Amino acid sequence: MIIRAITAIAAAGGLSLAPAVVAPNASAANAAPCVFEFHTGRPYMHEPVSVIAGGAVYCPDPPERFIATLSLQYRLNGRWVLRNSDSSNRIPEPMQNLATWAHCEDGYWRAIVDMWETRDGEEKVHTEESNLALIEC
Image (cartoon, rainbow, N blue to C red; front, side, top):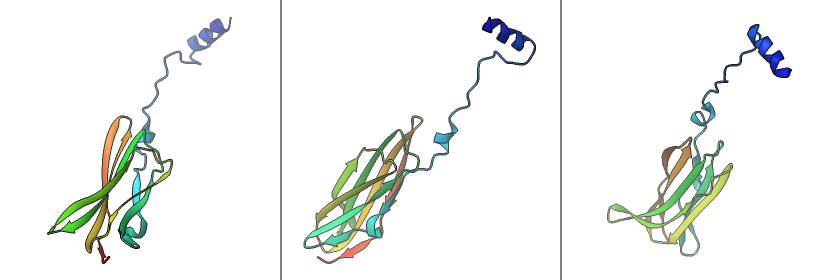
């Protein structure tokens, strides 16, 4: 009985029985990317013998998958040498802290974070670099 009434209304032009077309999810395409903010803006010395780099990942629109690697590098003989790194695959909802450390050496230090985020099956990579720090141990 209800089906006949719906069919009659549809036949009169008052209701469409065509399948609904759903627009693609535009929110993933317009989602804000994750960003990383370094604590103090650069690596810093922690008494007595450590250099620390850290910060926080902010994802206002959490992705489906997420990986971040924070690397601490030291300038040696004119090139950057990896001293330590730490990674996380936890999705920031909306924030996550990440840090790494190395034994102190006099000279220039920097931190680099690489972030991979997946939205709608598409992977995007972001790299951010800290300011340089001249550290005397």
